[in-house]
Length: 166
Image 1 (cartoon, one colour):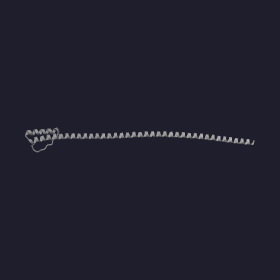
Image 2 (cartoon, helix red, strand yellow):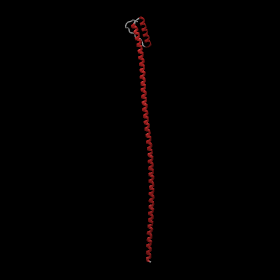
Image 3 (tube, helix red, strand yellow):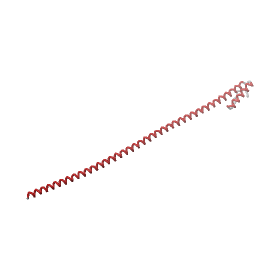
Image 4 (tube, one colour):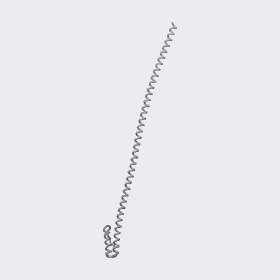
């Protein structure tokens, strides 16, 4: 390892820290400040790279957790919307059932009123027919009385005539 501006590329992680310590120790043993600085720099770079990777992983985890929370919130909104739709549909169905029941009750009431009106009409017609029969009976009786009175009058007139002729 020379003291020149030669750049070496090493991997990060444990290997990068190890190589950095070796360079630092070798530089201190040889009295090569450049090599010792390069070792410290490599260790710091490796440590910063590891921290950046950890922070990036943490950020990715936080991003995924945020996405998951957003998906949960969206699912909850959809569930709430579906529940509201279901409640609305149930309310509409209940209102429809009430309307059908009210219509059926109104039809039954109307049918009962029609039946009562027909019974009343039939009763009135029967009463009118009975009244007509009574009126016809009274007329016949009056005719019969009139005929009887007329017959009596004729008989009395005939008797008067016979008495006068005698």
